[in-house]
Image (cartoon, rainbow, N blue to C red; front, side):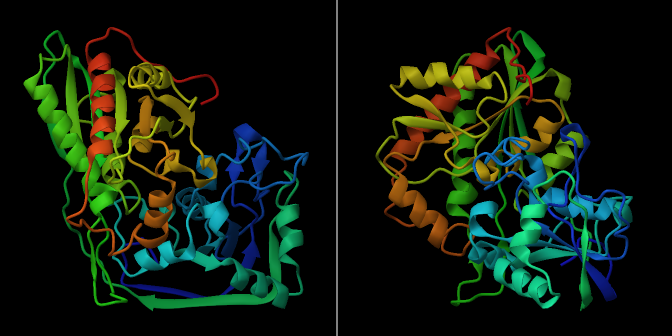
Length: 416
């Protein structure tokens, strides 16, 4: 696919280059490109970070936070970096553990339209062609060039790695597409603070799903019931709770973001064009997917635990509920970089992304991810009971109320 606003993409006989993890991170002493000219070439890059899955004791271990994905491991970063390098295209080599989701998730979203923000400098910011390639297909392509993928992957775990052009392999790409400018909106509501209205506590939840796409079983509607109608419903309920209670001392804003599934676009736009200043936004509380059920998990998972002082605010209220905080059990999936709090976090707003733990939800969570996540089957059914989610919403209300009525400013922790 392409995020360029053009009607046709053509790449003819472009050399194919294995570019390791496609990372240029000077603050970590890492550059997969080494000034090698990859302009006009197709890049093959590995999903996730160089130290993901590295053998115990490997020199790269910890260079990119171990198995916890950094932003450099995300496909969005790799597409952007390929554009900065002047590549003609980029293919991310998929594997389920490194991506955090199976190939079926990519298939489920591949027939939906792509969206992007209108960009003045799109030629520099968007690579002509981008996509994913299955691991076994990439391995076969590399093998046909007389090289060994496992060996190249091991070499890519070294900061001395240099891009490797696949001998005798070129790729041509030719496809048409239609593009049009449309208008979509973030929906914002605000309860002014009674004492410090210029300071803001922000709740956010994305209202979009994947819309309609080519059906495989006759159902072409991606309802997004869990992801993320539940988050929007929670936010509406939080707004009601704040409105019915005493006026908060700080202002409280409720933001329903558009185009999260297209790459956090609504939140990205707000971060670049804030309605209320980000420097006086105390914290951003994100809500993205609540599973139905009645069993309240004794755990609260903080996605991106340890990055900011918002952890202690939720920990105090979770303790009052008889629950405990645990870190993200799947940090390799990069959850911190995959939802709407992240564009604001990049601009300095402390983020809180907390969800029910998996104790008591293991079977339901696995079933949802495997069978409904980003599929038409993510739909409401009459047997839904949201008792457990209501407890989580009460927790997030208490945390937001504490922040709104406080004079404290949560800060980012060192190294975040």
